Image (cartoon, rainbow, N blue to C red; front, side, top):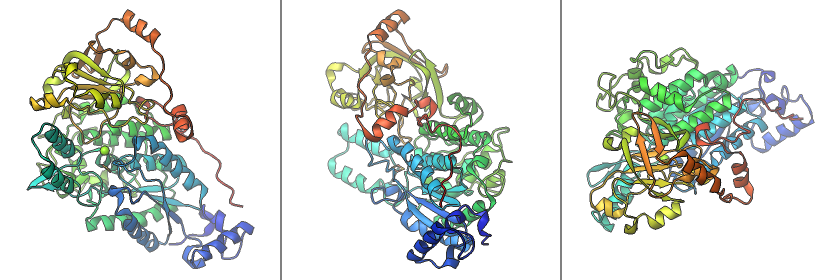
Length: 580
Ligand code: FES
Ligand code: MG
């Protein structure tokens, strides 16, 4: 399987043949001996970088340290030479204020690491929320043959005979606790039952949505994204990915060839048929931007018109990722979706070396309750709507299938919170006289203001209303929302308040009208008054004084543009390093 050295980029580091080349090649070879490798183990073989986001602080990736060994096994078997690189871990649960602040940092690390080392191809290992887009964005910009190994979902949660879902049941139980219906002892049990194996969140949150996108883009092997992290099929998928990485390195299959406009349309359709996380809109727009592929918010709304929701997975549906896998997984879902004419593009290339249509052509649905047919969908149309209006000139999104239907057209008086700290301090204050008709407004939580657009978008309902049985209210913000959240939450308002968007001008008592069928979000205040408020508005102080945060604030784009850095959000080539 080894090819002659001149075909390989890594040969520039190691020289041609066993002894030829320049002084640096001699030095590099000597250091490979120091690493313990024989010349015949690596010379002339494609070097496959395994980018591993494993860390002790990332429970979703705790198995990736060992799983990298199976990837290496595959690389060796196929005649390649594997080198594992630890890269930054973005642990959704632990990293504050939000890993979203660091998505672009991991993307930069990925791009620069691939460019600066003797690498011919890459295996990207991730899955916890932002790791998937970050790794794919970096690999896209590097332009190297690369494929993605999804971390896989954790097993179902369990508590007293009930199945628990990541995020969704965390929020639900905490609301029950706040309402006084669940005590501390039971909460301690729930703590131990919510997350009980390696793997990412097993609801249709951002992790499950984005790994499905990686597969639907054609950047992961068929079926890879649905395999539970602890299933031995996951080991085999990792080994197969290592083998395939060698092949694409030799064939020169780049992300540019795979992640085309058609591929992004299929990924968008996948998000919508899964009723996936709203975060996917930001990430897919950012990924497309790296490749010069035009993808806009409105594309999601347009594609959603044609795409039924076929996955009955929480938070919109009833089941979890483990059930989804046993029901046939993403391959079966795509096969069902392929029955809807004109949605998927079966002929486009993939990293698997087969046209995309072969990802799903021969798959079967084993449980039609979990994976529906277009004739019996969870919903007729995709679950995400893009809203505009004087409160969101550049757009806002709502996952309306996760909302109470009666709130989708609603007018009510605003109660405004200027920050998350303000919200936490005052939400249970009965003197605010919040009722179920109030529109809760959170600002200062966007890409700049958050900073990093934290997942504050499912604003808590005041405890006294929870006790009365109120389960949903209209909530609007420039924040994001966890893909495992639910409720009538308008998110990603652009431009954000910190950048002077109209959200900054709302006052408590103003009427806000949400009309999801009409796709509008309106602040019922006349233009003259808004102009007066705009003139009096003072920009808040920047959240960072120095360091990465300052770089971030100087270059971050708004939610409708993907929250990438302006200097990264375009195609282009940088000079390759001269290894001499
Ligand atoms: Fe890692 Fe949810 S915390 S995927
Ligand atoms: Mg999440």
